[in-house]
Amino acid sequence: VGKHFKSRGPLTCVRSPQGRPVYLQAGGSPAGRAFAAKHADALIAWATGVEGMKEYRADIRKQAAAAGRDPDDVKVMFLFSPILG
Image (tube, rainbow, N blue to C red; front, side, top):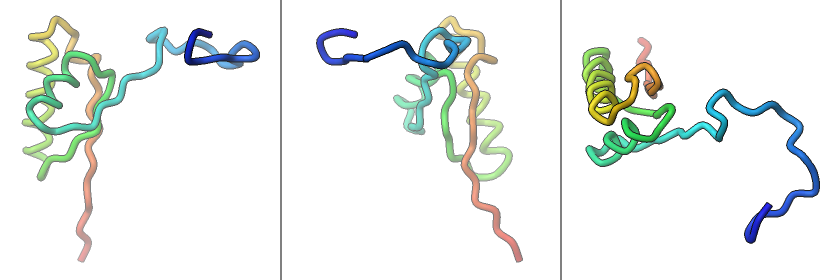
């Protein structure tokens, strides 16, 4: 409760393991990747093919470690479009 938010009662769910809302980021630019590696709990990404996904994930892990984070703490979820036929 504060200047811009009011509540009539307690939240009726348990606190998340992070102790705060989960930070989800969805930007694939170099700046977006750097932001995600430093701050996000998870990110939504697009990459072409399995190798592209592996390279993207490796880049996020490298940047997370450089930012002083455990690389395993940043989850990467890829969007994909299967082509059938």
